Image (tube, rainbow, N blue to C red; front, side, top):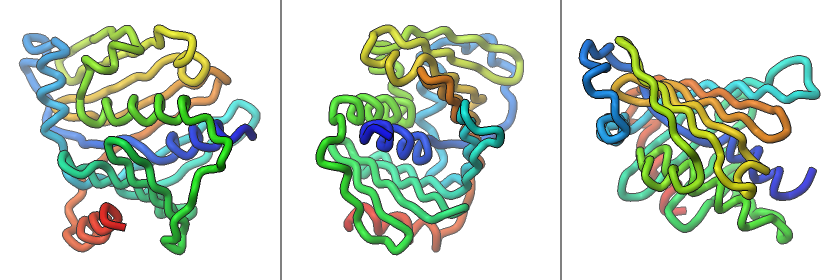
Length: 210
C-alpha cells in the first residue's frame, strides 16, 4: 500500500467528533451554514465513537471503537480502544501517532505530505465547524428537516477528488454522524455519542504534552 494511503487510512480510522442532542422544532427556520456552524462549535469535550470502514475488496466491514477528546485551544486526541489501541494527536500544524504501548510512531519518510496535509486540514475544519474553509475544496449543499440537518460536500478539485469524492455530515445541534466516500469506492462511517468521564478526559489530555 502506498505510504500516503497508509496515512489516509489512519486518518479515516482516527477522526471526527460529537454528539446527539434534542430535536429542534425550529430546524427549518435556522437552515443555513451560518447557524449550523454556530451549533457545531458548541461541541462536547469528550465523545465515544464507533467507526465502520467498508472496503470494496472485503466482504465484511472493519469496526472500531474508542474515544475522542476535542480542545479548542490544543487540538484533537483520537484514541481507538478496540480492536487495537492506537492514538493520534492532531494540532494545527502537526500530527503525532502512538502505538498500543504509547510509543511515538513516525510516518514513512516518503509519505505524500501534500495529501496528508490536505486530509488533516479537511478534518480539522469539520471539527471546528469551519465551513468557510471547507468550501475552498468542496461545494456544499445543506438540507434540513424537522429533526436534523445534513450537509453534502462534493470535492471541487482533482487533488481532493483523488482522495475523497464526497463527505456527508449529519447532525442536529451537533454532529452525530460523518460518512466519507473515497475515490476507490471505500467508505467510512463515524457515529458519535457524548461521554463524561474525568479520568479518561485527563488521560487523553496528557497526549497533548507528549
